[in-house]
Image (cartoon, rainbow, N blue to C red; front, top):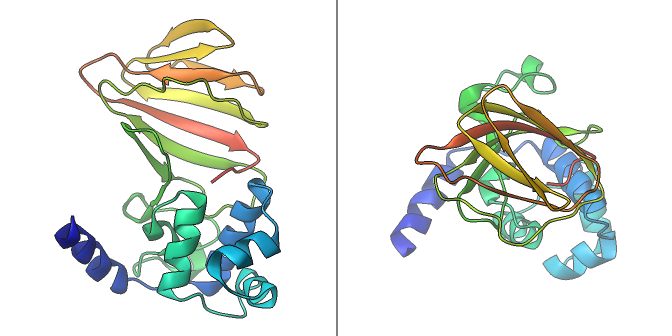
Length: 200
């Protein structure tokens, strides 16, 4: 585990952090989770003023700050690092496949990448891969509107107590109902998942 963490750290150091983008993402994360500036500042052992400056792109968070923030919000620290190959004129509009940012999930068997350039808009688009055997056992309910489109594979979702089997080309919408999901197949299910407002 230590060797793996060291390798990840080396990769992280090769990337650059865009303070403005990071600040917007931190603010969006904080707002979507109903976290106050004071609560986040206490978590980082920093002042409210410093957190405010980070969110406005006026100060740079340290690696330790980013690590603490990522742990607080349950996302990988790599989320905050952009790809050096990204063109400045594309930053607000384009996400290249090789530059997608991983986003957090506490559920085993779910791999998610952000398709939106950042979290500052009214919604976020996510590429979700549900690995074979993945199963969200406890129902989840969020104060959001969400929609999903199955790109490939077979995906099962229980919405408000009823299970539905979706194949490639099928889609669904959630409007605050309790739900859970599973993939009982031998291959992954790939979905595009749109969430409003952003939650990651």
